[in-house]
Amino acid sequence: MSSIKKNDKIRVLSGKNKGKEGKVLKVNREKDTALVEGVNMVKRHTKAGSGPGKQGGIIEKESPIQLSKLMLVCPKCSKPSRTGVKTLDDGDRVRFCKKCMEQLEN
Image (cartoon, rainbow, N blue to C red; front, top):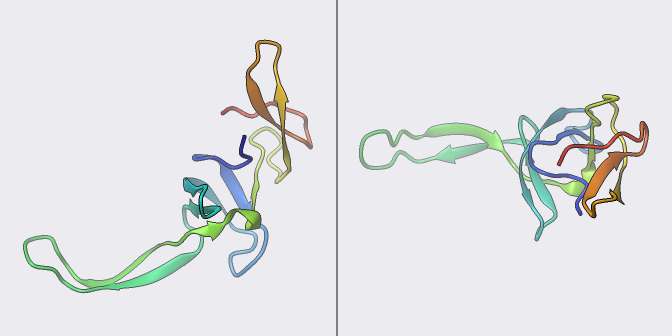
């Protein structure tokens, strides 16, 4: 089970975006990267295409960031914390915050 999933709130631990928080839009397990809303912004220069609505210019968008630079922010205690996995009595595996020991919704 992974510690960071889509729609989780995270904080960046290192790099030029250190300290920023955002919501995970997409996670790529093969490359160990995540796309985070408002973090690691890059400028993309696009050429105008043929047809209506194909306008060119400079577009700012998110770029993937390594999962090792991210830490989950617990929704209960609002602090970045490590997560653990425990198995419930009915056999379900759930993530939990190691600071406040609260179960995180999946």
